[in-house]
Length: 371
Ligand SMILES: Cc1ncc(COP(=O)(O)O)c(C=O)c1O
Image (cartoon, rainbow, N blue to C red; front, top):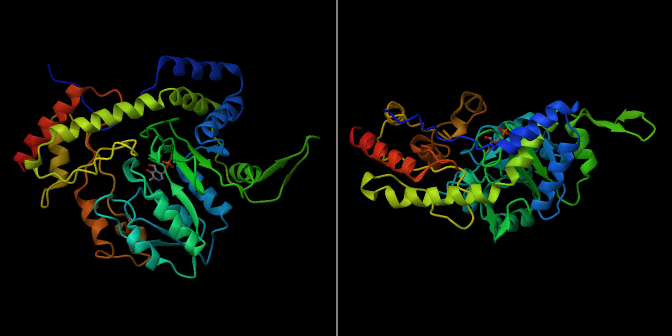
């Protein structure tokens, strides 16, 4: 019997959550309502009491954070070229200019040694990304931001469940943005959450999320700011509430699976493994780099033939046509380009078994031997 296809990720949704979703569907109120409020309260609790507002994506959260930080035309925003393209797209969306800083070859996150030199009089904000859930060094990051009076919008889309100095990412810092996309460690199908700093009015954040509408107790309304439409539904919030109960167990299981990969992937294969961080990372993804000269497309296809899904997260984004049109070119960020060419995402999700890891490791061995 051939083993079933093993995807690189798969959400774990329990029966209790499915029943809760059904309850919402039967309740007569399916858009933003009591479940959204309960989800926001639970997330705020998780983030040490900081205000949290939920959205229909982790892209909307980033865009609203930029607007709340008053970043727009004439401003530049610094970020990493090795991230999901959403991180840079939102900078363009608000009319600002993205400036990329190459990545650290070890952490694969923005290289903080290069950050200082990239800051100019036009720089308003920095968007660090915790790739694969490995946190950017928050101590160094915030020291640099404070020195230059910059706002920080943490793109922690992949870092829900990660920690810094033993505290959850989200419990400190400036703006912190999470994604609850289907692949994330905690999912609502699609969704996101924005943790707000103390100087930002949560009511303004709510208006930016829903057409700028301000409602008064007498039933009247006004619109005093241009808002979009990015509220989360109660259906999605019910999923998020169900997921939160398992977050600690999910993270623990992911860490155990990652450890197993480290134990089982033989150094002679020539793979470059990610930093073995079991303290801070939530192991959102397990991403070895293929040996130089490996045809990644052929490797991914060969793994698929063996029933194993492999992802690519991500090619360096400044080489996408849209960004080349803005003037970016090959050679601009050599570390991101090299890692973007060689990275692969192996299966890692809480429901995976130890035997699944064995299966992946054996397939990797065979596919690399045949290259
Ligand atoms: C680093 C990063 N930033 C932003 C996003 C955007 O989140 P969403 O897909 O929820 O809009 C993602 C989602 O994949 C991401 O991984």
